Length: 276
Image (cartoon, rainbow, N blue to C red; front, side, top):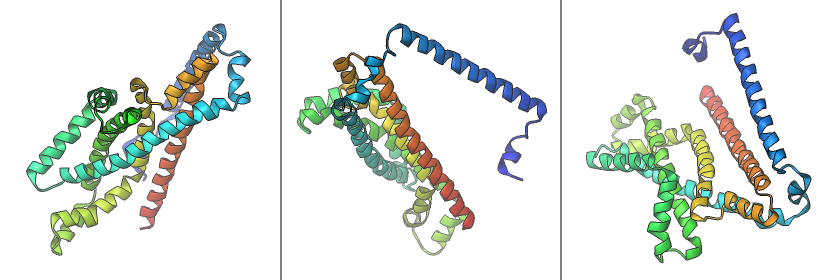
């Protein structure tokens, strides 16, 4: 019997019919909403051919606006996810420490940064520190603020992933390590942490999707990422709505690719565990 069969009853004929009806109603509602949006865009003249032609006929739309925007988004996301993994590993291990003061300190830090909105951290980091100090050049202050906020928030999330991943391992593994003379710290570093990281790899890739999406919040502190460049593009070509739509499509394509990669990784790891 599969896990799904244990957790959920198999739907009967009436339940399946009800699901089909609800699905059909949902599809009709989505189509209706999409049609209303289409009519509004058509009424406002946002779907006229000349509004969309620059994306096909003018290379500068891509070379001067959209590609630099993607570069800014990827730069902030790449730096942030690397630093967030380091932050998450350190504070995740700290939350698992047998030394109570260290464990409490790491728990407070993690819970604090998980609770503060990312945009608020960006604003504080930018206006409260980087924009008024010489620690980074002025032109890099928005990037530094975006990276700081994304690192702190996503690092706190990864720290919780590390903690829950280690707690999800069989207790016999740590007991066996202690039985052969390893210290709790050695057991964590050499036995538990490698397995937890392997198990949480799909979740880490999924967190990268969150980082990419949240990088758009840098718009609020003038960081030149995809959303900000799309605004500039819309002003230059008088097609603001099409510019934002194209930016949204690019975000969807990138995040969908990462999501599918996370699903692929999860499937590979399930097969590997099944063979083991």
